[in-house]
Length: 531
Ligand code: HEM
Image 1 (tube, rainbow, N blue to C red):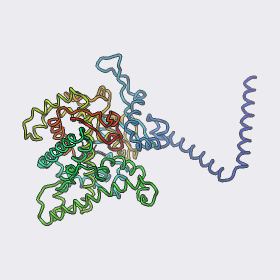
Image 2 (tube, helix red, strand yellow):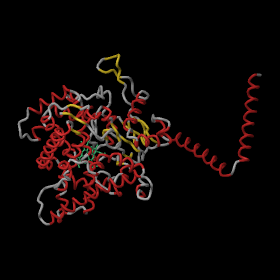
Image 3 (cartoon, rainbow, N blue to C red):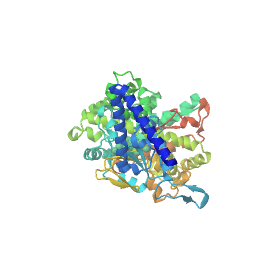
Image 4 (tube, rainbow, N blue to C red):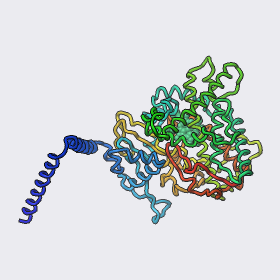
């Protein structure tokens, strides 16, 4: 009886609703009816498509199923690596084959493993499962750089870094790798050493003058001068001038510029016409690097052609007229790529390394003792064997990876099973060092700077450690970067054994908070050290 009553009541309500809706539509203009109809059809088709999508089984926030808008917002806010990492942590608890693991026999402090795969956008997943990561970044593997890289180059220029065609990439890599090989880099050591020595001198002068050293500024000068000197036979001399020129400001902001460039690629050609100063600034930044690189390459080429300059550079072979395999424009674009990829990365790593060491007196003193033991006139060869120095650099690269963000790759057309989930072909499978380097099982207390964890690294720790990417697309500048990191750290702590983080001018930990786009940078773009 009661059931019948409720049933009738519901029918009446439904009938009323239909009548009201019909009434509403009768009075509504046809465009509104069309818009509502289109919205209902769109919503319905989205739900059906998602229901049939194999990616729907992958854990992630509901919004990631339908739009990438929230992930894009995180990207533009310089927070995507942290956001994606929080998803790995959140969905780790729900991952199918994962249970709570105890760490070092402690039952009171269990370590929750991170989720192996999370969905971050309708067509993008992030992978933290180490064997899947290794498959994605295998030498000669099938996971190619995604269309994200198509949007990186200024004026659509193609370089080694953003080339997505594997065949063209292989040709370019072969051409450039001789210059960047360890055997060639060791010949360039005197230039690198001299540049770092000059940087030390300039840092000392700044300290004498103002009582603090902005190491972020000086490492940016140093790294920009090293890469330009090695590329063009002549540096941009920013260390000598000691001024934050527009070019240096562009380099320090390029990570954010890259985020804008890749998010709004179709707006950039209209930058001059649109009333958006940010777009103009991004275009001008790319133009500035391009202009300086083309000037320098032009000048160097003229010297090579007239037999004036016999100095070996990273591009010497490519500029010899008898073997010219790249056009001048291609060499300029490659040089721009080197400046962009090779200055900020090293400067950021050095800045966070110095900051982390200077915050912890026992780490600093142990490092100082080791580097002080070297004879005067030491070479990079002897520094390479310093145990603690290497541990410090590894730990800086782990915790403050200059490229902590997603390295997006396209899943091959046949699809793949990664981290226990089937991922259809064409999906973007990203991996991010931020998460790999914070795996709580491999790197306990992962947020603390602890060089000693590298005393006896396990096979798994080494596998998860990817500050220079991996496989076919691993960093071509790794030997140069290591040389700079080894020499700069050694020279700095030999010269400034009492270095500590300053509190002058309001400097605090907040300044070193991270903005992470493709690269990271300290929020305040400064790092003040007292010596
Ligand atoms: C500490 C310093 C450095 C770090 C942490 C670093 C990191 C990386 C990473 C993670 C990648 C892979 C990017 C991806 O897969 O999308 C990469 C690629 C690359 N890096 Fe570096 N890098 C450093 C220094 C340098 C230097 C000094 C150069 C000098 C030219 C350089 C040039 C390049 C180039 C050209 C590529 C693209 C390689 C390819 O796709 O074949 N990097 N780097």
